[in-house]
Image (cartoon, rainbow over all chains, first blue to last red; front, side):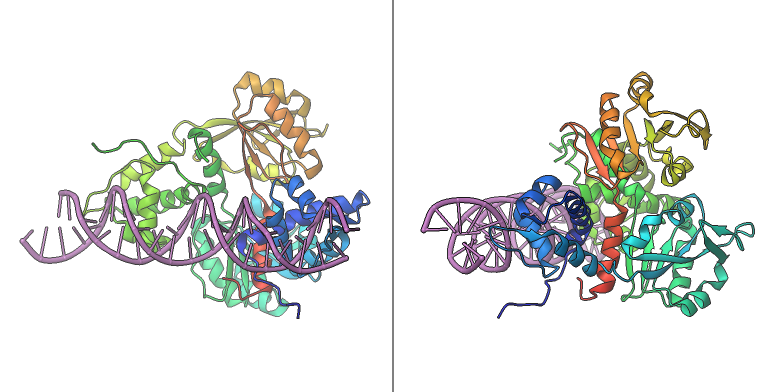
Amino acid sequence: MPHTDTRHASGPTLRRLPHYHRLLRQLRAEGRVHVSSRLIARRLGAVAPQVRKDLAVTSVVGRPKVGYDVAELIEAISAYLGWRNAVKALLAGVGSLGTALLGYEGFRDAGLDIVAAFDVSREKIGTHVHGVAVYPLSDLPALADRMGVRVGVLTVPAEAAQPVANLMVAGGIRGIWNFAPARLDVPADIVVEDVSLSSSLAVLSGRLNHPDSA
Amino acid sequence: MPHTDTRHASGPTLRRLPHYHRLLRQLRAEGRVHVSSRLIARRLGAVAPQVRKDLAVTSVVGRPKVGYDVAELIEAISAYLGWRNAVKALLAGVGSLGTALLGYEGFRDAGLDIVAAFDVSREKIGTHVHGVAVYPLSDLPALADRMGVRVGVLTVPAEAAQPVANLMVAGGIRGIWNFAPARLDVPADIVVEDVSLSSSLAVLSGRLNHPDSA
DNA sequence: TAGATTGTTAATCGATTAACAATC
DNA sequence: TAGATTGTTAATCGATTAACAATC
């Protein structure tokens, strides 16, 4: 009996899935119907068994001597990552980064539909930023709950991160995409994904200053 | 003989150093002079040996029963990450994300001094964005070389990423902070650090959709 | 001194890579 | 069929965590 249950995807695997998706779309645009793990690996700077193990989480099976069906893989990755039916999200903190994220059209294709924004600033409240209405932070829990928002994008200053995260949790949000440079203390069933620009920059600086790095 | 040569800092360690730095500044502001690895670990959601191993790369030694000197650690982390004398950087791609990054004052404190921006758009060339002059992309190699720029911040669309990275390399740049969703092909001695928002979002989505994740 | 804390070695854990039988 | 490619198990690698002697 072939096992149909998908293996659990590790963090590194999840991180790579969008790269596979991007390459596969490119290959499909070039008219390619099948693709081998070896080709994918070469184009992405990886090795073939890595690619096969990653793709296995989608339950797609390849054919020996032929490879994988490109269109099937694209669809399966989209489905696995929940890109088919976008989840509703809100954004808190309409500063320069928040504004830039509100202006990024691509999130809807990546399963994220930002339906409301929140800020403390009198000047911003009541305006629309890239088509998204800005509400007062104090309305966040009630509005999030009413609209059925599941994800919060956190782009507030460090000091405000924890209190605003609390508002998100109070509003019934399930996951927080945290761009603030602060560690969040949230209930165990809330998913937090940190985007730490300072960490990323530190890796770049460290490698530049200490070049013997592996 | 005590060994004075610093151990090599791994990627994960480099990523955590800014978090230690932030917490230590906070502790210093509260008037704390010494700190134990145990306290740092608790505040950052880590374990004490992890902290001690990370901090060891700075060559700072702690005192049994007392802990580490807070000010000394702050200084040593800054020095290790090259935050003392900021490196010159340029930014290519003055879109919404590029504009947001140009507006972020904190980079200078993190050792990055963005001295010029580049774009293809006629409207943008010749203007200043958050005080930084925008030049035509074609001038990038010559200007980078002349100004002694060492880091390039890449915030162009995916299709432009590789050609613009090539311009950066031609201009003598040593490291690229890549925000574009594309894999860059560069000489082996060039450091590339990717910030992949789609990967980060994929982790969040994957954990939300497949909750049994570890 | 007694006890807390460091620095480091050893054990564990998880992810990557290599190897290879199954298969079309 | 012969040979390329998959799916999966075993080996390797690197990072995290546990353990503990040294030390102030």
